[in-house]
Image 1 (cartoon, rainbow, N blue to C red):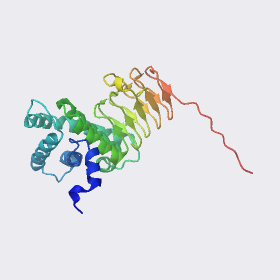
Image 2 (cartoon, rainbow, N blue to C red):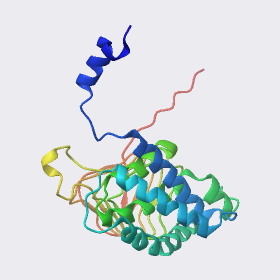
Image 3 (cartoon, rainbow, N blue to C red):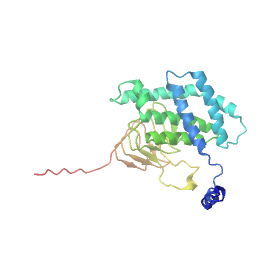
Image 4 (spheres, rainbow, N blue to C red):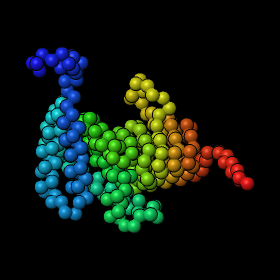
Length: 263
């Protein structure tokens, strides 16, 4: 049978209507993400060699992404690399926040090597900085890779301040227009999302703002672009919040637990 005339192949070609969908882009972006993480944190990594390889992979993935921009890739890469020390400084503060707030942490090395929340924050910060250069697909692929590995979904467009702490990580969702200030602590299952899902809201602030020194406990949901959680506030577990909360508040979900003793 002539493979070129196979009716199944013809039908697949008919329905395969994404000529710019190159899965190699996803695979190479994941490699780029891993290489970035190793470059910043691995003690045995030779920085010069890694930075050269990162530049080559960066040029490859921006070409695959069909990026159209007047600024040459080399210039963009140089600008991005110049910001890496600042990103690393922020990530070191994040790691210290983990060590200061988690009694289960045995060492700072454990934070960098074993904490999915820290990894998710690291990839978020590395991807967020790339958004300045009009290549949104690559940052999104980076954070989705971290999402798959950690269970934490942070959109690269979110704005997150210093000393950010995510405990346990699993099930956390942080939307594109979220603003998080400094020294915020978030536990597993927290959602910072929008009240509605509507394409017409694309260019509006759809997600909440969280001010300094806020703690949000497990499975709390905070929704809405005009929702502001005031500084020094604690949001209790399972709370559902759709309106602003003043500073220095405690928000708790009212629940009733009944215990029946069997005799």
